[in-house]
Image (cartoon, rainbow, N blue to C red; front, side, top):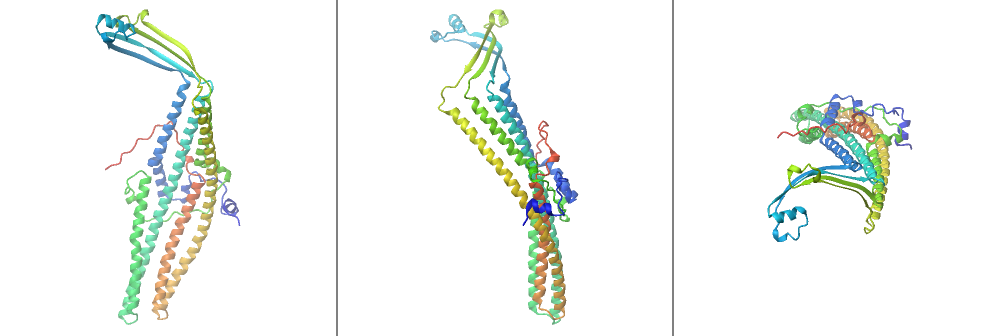
Length: 464
């Protein structure tokens, strides 16, 4: 039996194109859903947090690149010193000697600049920059993965809300019908055509149906609250906007699949782990560079004087310059251990990358099957609702004619309520399965690329 991509490709209602995948929520043709998605992208706090991490990673890249350039430091200082006469023999500077002789506080003025430059002969710094750049790019894909999850949560939460509202409407309609039957049964009882047992059973049925309404109302409110949080708002901010019932978004029959290999470029989690793997490979070069000597050039030029009046004279000039070579001889195996650690981290990242690809393929296969099978179930439930309604009408008619027991009416009422609720749940499940499939295929973030050079949005302070 075929399944997954192969089964979907064989389905005449399946389109192999990627058309519409970048903004898959538009296929539901629900303006309210589209509005919620757009506002969530602008205001969701998890997304803003991910974007802040992009800026952090970008700054880290610049920090790692800084040692490639010489460092210059300007200095300027003033000190006033009184040397202890009892420690005069310890002092070695000219200032100390003068201070001891004069037994007076002395001033020292200094200004100048220092320079140093570690020449990256063996590429340790360059590999460090390469690793930071890969981590920076990984943070961008991490943000895209957060966005992908956000889109799915908004759409699923909205579909859940409309499903609960539909179930609430179904329950209220059934309650109204059952209440009408209760009135009729009481009238028949008063006329001697029904028993008190029939009345009691119908009263119990009405109470059972009514007991489901508070639970569904709670689910509706909680769904609205969840959507409010996703939009960066207070929980009840969307109550007025979303409290009125609306149809469940209908999933189209086409599946925007494409080829399995396209997942490698569409899924941001795969591309993120690819960049993380590149970062760990670069870190091997960083660790290996510690085996070799480091070459530095250092220099300083200063003006020193005990009087500010001749600070700028030629006699106040002081300078030093020279190369420095450092080469670790013995560090207890630390450098080799760091290289081994970097290699192990590279292996871990490679395994994680492979796992992410396999998990992505499995997720898509599962969602294709779930969507296809739930759509079949939805068709059967449509037939079940139609048959249940007909059974209720017939059993009621036969009961009123004295040809059926009242228990048959009760069973038909319960069956109809259950089948109608199951249908509403299934309709929502079909749409949610399509949302999950679009998410698994990596669609949705491409139209909202993030420019890491743009400033961070202002953080909104919630009102009390």
